[in-house]
Structure formats: C-alpha cells, structure tokens
Length: 563
Image (cartoon, rainbow, N blue to C red; front, top):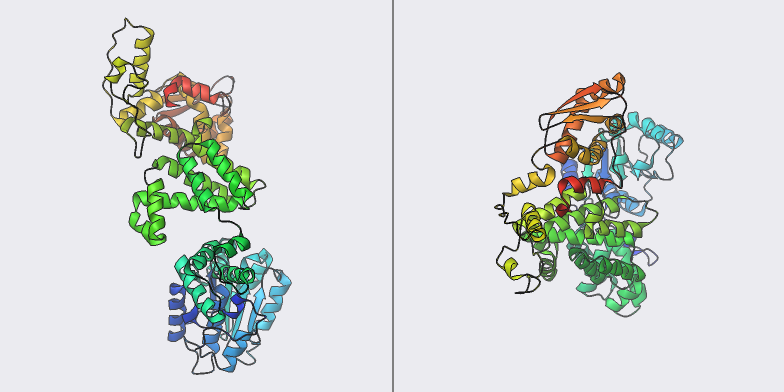
C-alpha cells in the first residue's frame, strides 16, 4: 500500500503525507488497536469522540475509519485497500457520503438542524454515511441540545465522529453517548522517525540532530513538525538542514539560558535568574515557552532524584547525565515549589503580562521569605527541618576551618535547634549566665514547638488568626465571610470559644459543615484541634485578616528564627 496520497507539488508536507491507513498512523497504538478490532468484529459504534492535542491524527483517524467502513474491496475491513473508488474519493475529500463539518464556523443551532434533516436520507454512493465534526466543543449549548437526540439514535447507516482538542467543554450528555478515544501527544522518537521517512521521500537532506531539534520544537504534534520541516527546507534551499539553517528559521536556541535560569533558581540568585530570563526574551523566546521549558526541566530534575530509570527513558543518555549532575542534589523543596508555581503560571492562558507572571513565579521560589501565606510558611518550615536534619540535598559549601567562629564555638555542633540558638543569644548577652543547652529534640517535637510552642493560648491564636482565616477562605467563601464578625473569647488546647454579634451569625457558623471547615483550618495552621463553641457577645474590633501586620504577629509568637 502506498505510504501517502499522491499529490502535486502545491500540497504542503502535512497534507501530502497524511496517513492513508491505520498502519501509517504514528504514535497512537491504543486507538489503532481499538478501532481495528471494532471494524473486524462488526461492532462499530454509532458515535465516537476523538480527543487529544492538536496535530496528533484525530481527523486522519476519522477518515481512515470512514474508509474501513465503506471500502468496496471486501469491506468493511480494518485495513482499507486504498485503491477502490470509495477509498480514493475519501482521500481526495470528494466523497459525497463522508461529510466533514467545522464546528468553529458552523456552530449555531440552524447548522445542526440542517444536519438533522440530512441524516434522514440514505447514503447515495457508499455503504455508510460518516459525519466528521471537527472542534465539536465550539458548538453552542443550543446546538448541542439539537444534536443530542440525533446522536443518541441515528439511522443504522450513519456514524458520527466528533473530534476535539478540549473535551472538558463537551457536555456530559454528549460524552455519555460516544465511545471515547484519547489521542496522546507524540514522543520525540516517533516524530523523528516520521520526519526521517518524509525526508527520504522528499529528498530533504537533514541529519538526526536537526530532525530531533525540529521534533522538540513541535512539542508532540506531528503536523507541527512537518510544517517546521517544510519551513526549514525553504531556508536551506539546496543545502542540507543544519543548526545554522534552524537558527535562521526559528531563532537561536535558548536552552542554555533555560538551564542558566534553573541554576540561578537552585542557587537562590534572584539577579542571575532575572538576567537569564531577560536574555532569553531578547533572543525572541516567548515567556510562556520559557515557563513550559522550566517546568519540564524541573520535572526531569525530580525524576533524576526519585526515578533515574524513568529519566533515561524520556531523554537521551547524555542529557540524563547533565540533568542528574545539575539537579540531582538540589533540595527537593525547591524543585516542588518551582513545579507548583510554574504550573500555576502556565494555567493562566490569557495573561496580559506573561513575562511578569513568569518572573513572579520564580521570585516566589528564590525568595520565599518575602511572601507570607500558608504555602510559603509550609515551604519555610520544610527548609528549616532540612537544615536541622542536614537536608535532603547539599547544604552549601562547608565552612573553612577557623573562619568566622570563635574558639568556644568551634567545639560546638555546627547545627543547632531554635531553642539552642536562643539560649546562645542569652549567654552572649549575659556572659555570667551558665544556662545549659538543652539536648536537641526530635524532628516531630521541633515542628510542634515551631508551630505553636506545644500549647494554644488566646495570644497565640490571635497571632495565627490571619493564617487560619486564609485557610478557611481556601475551603469555603461563605464560612470566610461569616468569620469576619467573629472574635476570640477563650482558647486552649481543649476548647475554643468564639463570639459573634448576632444569633444569625452564630447559627450559621455553628452548622456542622461550617464547624468542620474552621476546625480543619485551625488544625492545619496550629496543629491543635480544640472543640469549638459559639456564643453571642457584644460587638468588638474585628479580628485581623491577612495583611501587612501578619508577618510581625506570627513572628512574635512563632519566633523570628523560623523566618
């Protein structure tokens, strides 16, 4: 069977080399196996949903399925002949009974009503009528409702194939009536293999390194890779495609600056990080692309620490060695913070200031002490525990012998717990005091002492109240709103009494669901779970929500050595 459709020179590479059969569909083995089995057994569904990223073969698979169902050479068959009138007309886009609809431009209810009328007529030429609705998520709610009944009970000779890049926008009523096939983003190896075959057929001179670079730029989309290959061929002319051609076509690679940025983040070098980002943008890199590359880089660094075998499967050996050398010893808390912040930045698809969002996400990793919220407090506590226990990664260059320490300090351990540091401070202020240094407590005891000193008092709860309110806000906005009227009456480890100015507020906050939310927030912040009692009390000054004074309040209770 020919690998691709014969076509004139005017066709672009991605159209000229579109898969004509399932054995040419690259990188989707599960989809191919499922559809071929359905055709071979005669159990073809009346509606399919093909979901996945752009350029992964959804429309091509729909056309191949149409060929399988309508092939005039011993069809239906899982491997269409490609030579009969039905296969040729579908490949050329001239088959009257295979109707492709672009839902982005035919999204209204009037278009779906027209489709419903046409479905009633029998096929005019082929065995089946196949409706391929591309980007189906673009249909309006009214259009989806109009399609629903037809999709559920179409005529026996009609098959629907819905294709979408955003399946979460398709109503559940539609999803429940379709067999769903997930198209995956293609691996770099699959894309490189396809590019090599296309290059051989087209007489394009390109080495494996250049094709690999094109595959990385395509980001898992084979169609994008073929478009990039054709663009590079235009820049190369009669010469071979090499690095200088790719630099001219797509810009100088900035992966070195991405690595420099990651190195600066790992070293907590804010200036170096901002400088590397600025240079990458000056070279033409998009901030969103930089964020994705950094996310990928830190993810690979996490794999280097927890699963080196999986890392070797995802990247070439030399790159795996470089990642292990650069990020294998980086503190895991920094890697996790970078992954979390970069993921949040990438999820903001329509940001007005993508560069600022990227820089802010990295600054939060490099300088976590400049931001006070529950997550940053958790990160700082984790860093403190790592320092107390020696850390999970390198703790910085060792102190040279005799440098920066007095003779008495040289005889003492290099690391001390927070109580030991405060004790040393008291001895320095009063040389006559001979207060002994307590033995270092366990890690669990350190954390309990760091959070609330082992007990809960009115003053400590008042200092922690802004953090508790923020934790409630993340769980329930109604509870957060009612909590703004509350004041602390009494507090200890067993019972917490809170006052509100009205019976309405008390009754709402005393509901079991509201009490559970507040109890969980108090436990998260303070480590204590007292029973909560609500009373009606005279209006008083409102408790402080998160604000500029929050850092000072928490520091006064928890101890400045934690920050």
